Length: 132
Image 1 (cartoon, one colour):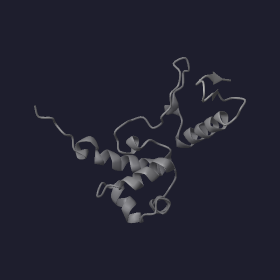
Image 2 (cartoon, rainbow, N blue to C red):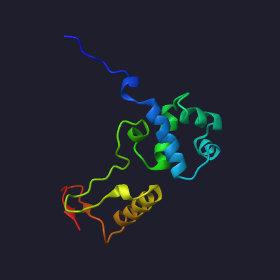
Image 3 (cartoon, rainbow, N blue to C red):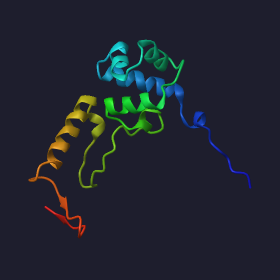
Image 4 (cartoon, rainbow, N blue to C red):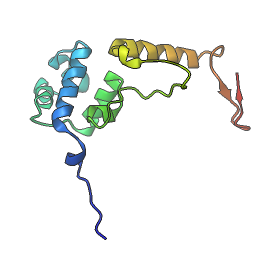
């Protein structure tokens, strides 16, 4: 039995990736030069990524994921999910209505809540039991 191996070029849509990088940069009101400075690359690199002339290396993709607060898979165009959030079914939240800045604010507020004794749940490491 012969197994089919997928090459990375069959999994990643590079044209889509170029559009995603451009969209994220513009969404965060950055010029190509500003993004290049934040990533430690040249403006020409960013231009080449956005025009699908070249693809960014893994380190650049990781830096963009951190900068734009999105999963790496989103930048590669492998998922439409920009945010990794598990929300109970009884909440009716449509996070697609928030722009990038709104998602960053939501993330920051979440961090505030989980770091607050009043709002977070602690887990006893010896018994694995939750306490409020």
